[in-house]
Length: 319
Image (cartoon, rainbow, N blue to C red; front, side, top):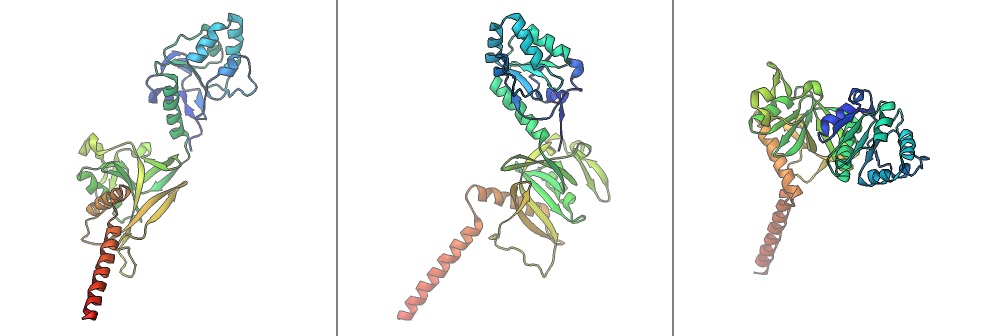
């Protein structure tokens, strides 16, 4: 889990933010919560529950109200708002920034930004970025690929062929997100997202060859930075004594944080084309999500066949 995000990282991800003052403090100031403060009550002088460690976002309401205050009152209010813990001030809609705010921020080495974005939209963009950066994370051993736009995490014991299978999928037009180690975080109560650690971004290890750069070999379309994990494929060495699901009735899941992700076990055996099998598994999973379940269709056909045979048997008995 990342405990804090530098303000400089926020600026890189939200290009609409334009630095007005305090550029030299971007790497010093950090943000440790995704909550954003709209300091309306504070402008009236009420500071009992002032969230000083949050980004302070001022929109049309806050700026227009502050314009009605006299100079001395504005100065006192903004001086109280500017604390050593305050990460930055942001003024939206390209509105004029009060000189008293700039002076107060300068005293405490706080960066001040301006943005032309609407306040609500800007708040949403910043919150989403901070939620992702500050989310609880863990590393999982496996390969994450995107198949037909759907994130598929391939897991299994070392040497079972995860990377080689992923390489075959890339050659078939799908995209690599992460090889060997996948950093996973929970985006919301129904979604987990996977991405590659910076040191492994766009890289794969193929036994006998070594490290390869997928982006250099296959182009930018063969890689992606992150994706939602929709399905887990577990590769397992073939065991003739094992009882594998042949009809697809037994749906299993694996819990990642608090999200249950569907899981399919694929036995690995010489001669099986794992890339095609995984590709079809992803397509079949998507079909189920759209309401078509081949196993239910088989069960329906079987029921109809039994019913027809029963009717024929009853007819023969009557004769």
